[in-house]
Structures are given as structure tokens and as C-alpha cells.
Image (cartoon, rainbow, N blue to C red; front, side, top):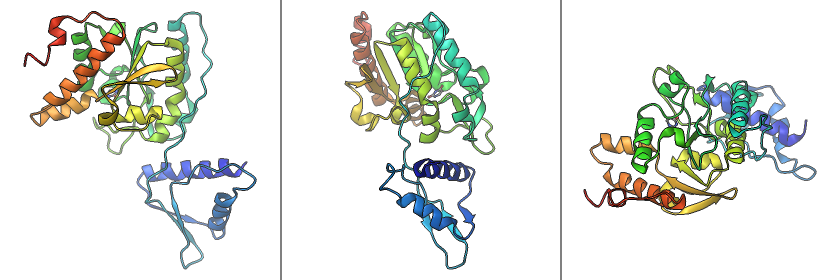
Length: 295
Ligand code: URA
């Protein structure tokens, strides 16, 4: 095994243990030196991805790896997956079948069993990308059907669109696991998103939407787009040749509404969606145009 591959494997292993709550691991004498040697081998081999851990030698024979540094982002994979079938719907179905047993995600041990694939029209002109399924999505095996999903459905309705007319995807196809999960959810980590990214890239390649909407900062990060939603929203960017509108995640609107606000964010999301409608050449009536002006 090459040094970068070994470091990457070690990093993944440590990250998994960190996600399970461990803060320290004990190493056999000599292992720390070997790990550092692997890290330092830059001349003959390409630079390995930075390890997410600080390696610290203790006075005793045993060395401890302290897991208190956040993991470095994983570089998104760029390979497309092989699809089968003649129609887009068949190709997407073949991808969904592949996702069911997707080892790179399963082997992480931090994602739940149930795979929740995308929903909607495989020939859609508009593709929306969220973060990961939550409790309700896992229960129904459909993305965006919980509270945030209902908010998204409302936004689509206001645009004059049914869910069945667009393609709704998540950057991570499994609900991220937490201890004592219940109905609790968390955002996927970069490692988890990277494990599922080939599906999203292949979905884009199959669907070839005219516009992609990235919902929230997690989806942005998962796509490898740098910057915050507040900085990037309001204008189109490009992702692999497709125009992307970045906007706030519907759960952000919900959170603000719960605190008695949300109007400003809703207005911004709506302004972003008006631009999407324009880009798609959709008719926009006066009510839609003035939706927030009238309030
Ligand atoms: N939030 C998301 O980003 N995706 C879902 O499917 C549900 C909630």
C-alpha cells in the first residue's frame, strides 16, 4: 500500500472512532514513528491528504494520538458511476440500486442502514440538492418529506411547480447516525458526503438539468463549492457546466420562523427562486413577482 493510501486509511479509521466519541487511542511502541515517517514521505510519493489528528509522543513508551483537531476536508471524488438502462428513469433506477449496497458509505459505520435516494422527474429541468435524509425521510424513504420538505414543497408550489416536475436529491443518501438517535438528525460530515458524491455527480450527468439549486451550506460544501450561502446566493454560479443558484436551506427558514422571524430569509430565498424561474424561461405573474412587496 502506498504511503498516501495508508495515511488516508489511518485518517478515516481515526475519524470513525472520533465520531463514536473517542478522544484518544493508544498506539504500540514504534507505531507513532512509523506513522510520522509515512506522513513525511513526500519526495517519492504525492502529498497525502493531511491527517486530521495531531500526533503527540508521550513520555511513556506508548504514544497517544490526540483527536482534538477537526478533520481536513476530503477532496470530492470526480468519477462518474456506470449506469445501465436506456431512459433517464432507468439510469437513475440503476444508480439507486447501486446506492443500496454502496460500500464506501457503509464502511464508514457512521451512516444509518436505510438508503434514501432522490425523487422526481429524471428528465427535470430543475434539480435541487439538499444535505441528507432526516427521521421522516428515512421512515418514508423519500427526500424532503419532513418539516423542511414541506417548506420546500410550498416554495415549489409558489413557483408553480409540483414535486413530481423537479428532481430532488441529497448530497448524502443515508441519514447520519447519532447516539440515542430517536428523531434527532445531524448534518453529514465531509467524509460522509464525499462517500456519496459520485451518486450526485452521476445524477447531474444523467439528468442534465438546466438549473441546479443548492440548498444550504452543507450541500455547497459537499459539492466542493467554497464560500457561504450569504455570500454566494442571489446570482448564478457554475458547477460542471450547469448554472447553480445557491440559497438558504428550508430548515433555516423554519428555525427563524420558530424564533418569530424568517421574513428576510424567505424574501431572499424567493428572490433566488425568481431568478431560477427566469433562467428556466418560466412565466412569472404579478402575484409571484410582487409576493413580498405586497406584505
Ligand atoms: N433536509 C435535507 O437536506 N434533505 C432532506 O431530505 C430532508 C431534510
